Image (cartoon, rainbow, N blue to C red; front, side, top):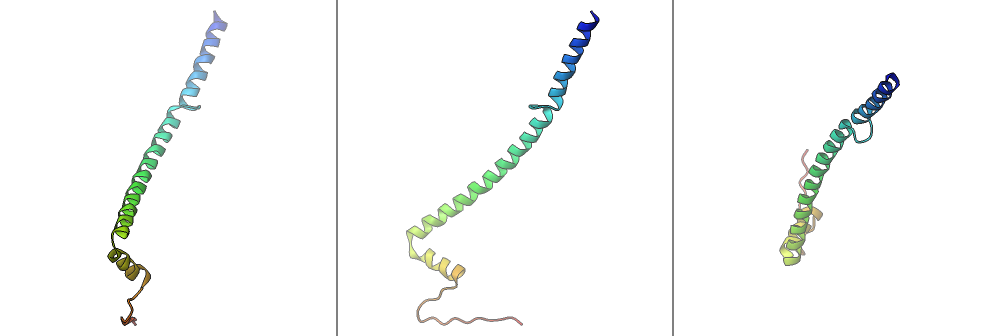
Length: 90
């Protein structure tokens, strides 16, 4: 009877160890849940960025006004015949 009780106790302890510390434990599940939440937030931000870029592509394909505005603001381009003045603050 005594050896059976010891054997069952060892089995119970090993199962509890795996439940709390081993692979698939509560701690690991909590960590993975947190990682999933972080990845979901990152994916949402990237989806919004992709939507903004897709709308810019549509705007650029529709007309030259948006291309010209982008070239002027981002690339510093000027039209032929225009004068460019650079004001430098002291």
